[in-house]
Image (tube, rainbow, N blue to C red; front, side, top):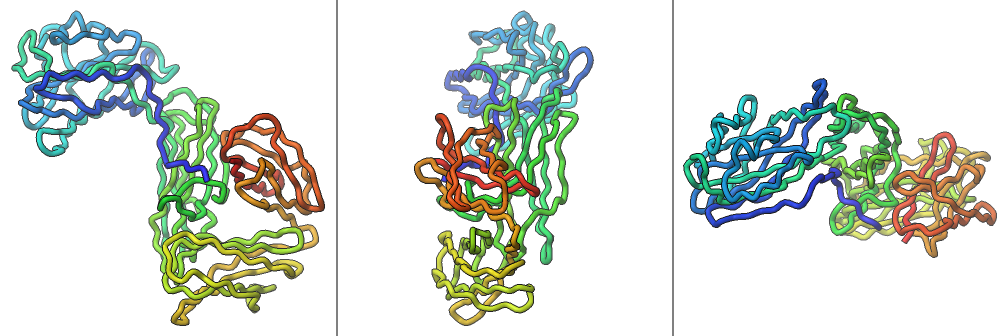
Length: 475
């Protein structure tokens, strides 16, 4: 299974950072992060946050931050402190007292006559990291960039520090030059609302951008299958498609969804939601996980239980992520969701914290709706029923199910019954169509992608109402 770890997409504009120290101090992890952009006709107001860690070593008096547009960046040598002539094109300068508790200064020591630092409205926080290490964060920095906000700005910054008292030409004891602007954009956040004890569980979702120019994004939601890889949840082919939306996004048009119910069984263990965002403006998809911190008490932690109509049978499958003194699963079926009969027994693993997969095949399903549930029995005889899964087996019921995943020899095999194969589509994870050939034997189809395709996750769609999607892993 290909693993995607939850991320916020980072676009870094600029050259690599140069760090220099002369033993009296060291500047570490300098960052200039874009927070927002807003039009201030005819110019553009840019909001940024600056942070860095400083090792004061033998002591430190003052630290200064200078910011430029990338086009005006002067690439100073810092053999001495820069003065007004060096900073004539700078968007702003910040002066900080780093002798003890960090504080903002209204004056630029090296050139008080020609350089006035940003001061009013800024916030500064110092975090003690132990020893002589301290992380300093300056927020609410507003810079006026000439010209309208047609594109996201490209900025560069220098951060330097001195141990000397601020005079006309203090020595530079450590410096970080060419610090690029970091843009976390678009930024995705979210939360799952447990609504215990009876639910339903819902999610909140927020997608924001600093870009003032509107652009189109598509985001898809998937319910995690509960399968752990090296102890972690992963985005993979077993995750269940929930929904898809295409919408216009800009700094003034954020995406906000609150308290949206999703298909979640209260009897299941906690399953997170994956958000996959794509856009023509992004080189790669952004994959973000909305973590589920809800708790469930059950004989076993059942991550997934589902049923699929095959050609002339129903395939049941379930996944557990933890079992404690479990004995067996009893598969039960009903035609009215009231009276259930026993179809068979599957032995459980007993006690384990390793993800387990189980399956059962009902070779003679009832005509009409089939209602299935699991009786989960412990070694001491205690038991609990799972939720009920409904599988329709009418004369015109649609069957659409993969036969093997990951696929073998790059041939996607699947069952399709009572549906036109012309409604089958294959896309890559970015939503691009993949051409293929299709052959059929009975209700079993073999799809072969055409041309040279890369290994990875693909989406097999059945374009009916409602649309069905299967995630396919092609090695």
